[in-house]
Length: 489
Image 1 (cartoon, rainbow, N blue to C red):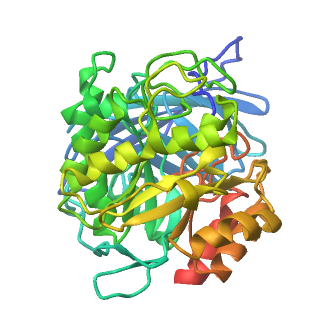
Image 2: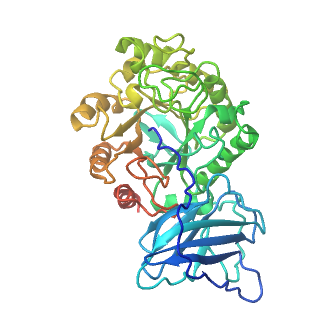
């Protein structure tokens, strides 16, 4: 899935009538210091609107990301904000750090502001939570956020026929969400993740009864190439991925690591960008760096059979080549491909790179047309000496293959021979009628699927499943949430 543009910081333009300032008191109990303190201020107010701010201080162990939530009691509505990603569901307001201010050391503070509407009363919120912990009151001892509790264990998986099975031979479907951010934040110089990935954030995903999370990655960031800021690339990026994998597994969630953006200049049909760097979706992996990326990823996780590898997000060599046969040959074999200016790494090259490390992890392989076309997947599928290969498929309401007729003719034959995972499902309607059709077809055949995406973007531009990282669903996301809870509750 292509991504919406990053939101620029909002600035307040124009003059407002200053009618006074009111600051919420900080209620601290005697004894132990509060885990966090929040000062809420109304800096200016006028008929029907006001400007406010929150000053947040972290008094416990350092955190790499933060999410503040509080409730309005007077019907106020946030209209825009700055220095945080602001959202509101009912009376609950959530502010999530921007990429540049996510780190809060012990005793560190950050301030974020907003504009909001009001009528009748403009009551000051009385309770604030930072990363799920209540602020301004005496704190209870809590484990540091870098040590996720082992509340579950993700299963070791392998392919058996056309199913995933665990170590005991039980069938296992991958049902969950995508967690975007690791593919774009680092290459854009903003950070590593888009929003929090701490234990509270993973618990919110688990509360949807998701058992799998697909994590898009960026090869230049993983390899620490020179165009990436050192703090967001190389060992720092790898450590962040390893930490997220550990957190997911601790909640019994299968991590699916996927290459989303890669090196190589492409300016042909349907080009996402003209940049040689990994700043957008390219039609195919590149031979220069992608095999090295997968060798490194596989070497890092080869001793962890709970991790699944997804070779390449959405291949589309069919937009560049003259014939479908050329496209499928490029897809499998790589090399010099018609219409693509860089040397291509084929899917067979990447399977070979992974297996050469000794890694036996399951591998997902998407087809043509942004992984929406599996019509000749069985004919051209790579050879896997481990027999641990599965097909990946993406479907949105605007794709060509988005009907039961197409699924019956092109997906069913694949699903009869290998596991089939819909790595991305979604729609751009801010509703879930289409996704409801998709999950029914996949449920009827006991297949796997993951919704795009667990990010607080606009549900039509993203589309996004949530409006806040506490798991508050959008009108689109509520369909998948309720369905997963019905299946796995």
